[in-house]
Amino acid sequence: MTTTNWPTSSEEKNDPYIGLESVTDESVEHWVNAQNQRTNAAFGETPEAKALSARLEKAYTSQDRIVTCSRYGDWAYNTWQDDIRSG
Image (cartoon, rainbow, N blue to C red; front, top):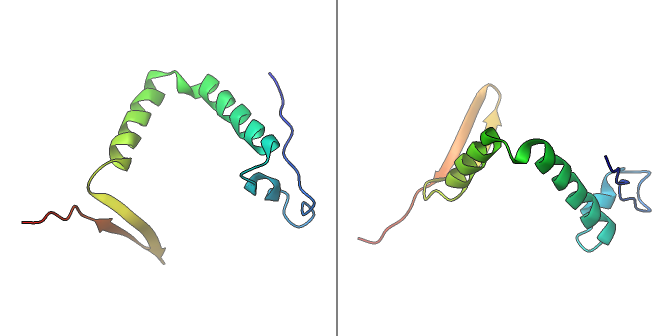
């Protein structure tokens, strides 16, 4: 297994994960791609993973989407955005 070093930055003392916030740093892209390859190798080709991907794609592209989820104390709320069609 290949190990990929965690991207670092000069602000690492305050936030050890700050290096991953850069969208233009090639080391971040390399690290993310390596993690994606590890995940896909472990889980990406199983029937269960394919079924989950299909379910998530259906949910994400649904016309009845949950816009936000929030929790207040013991209560959880979903805010929906329904398809608005002109009549």
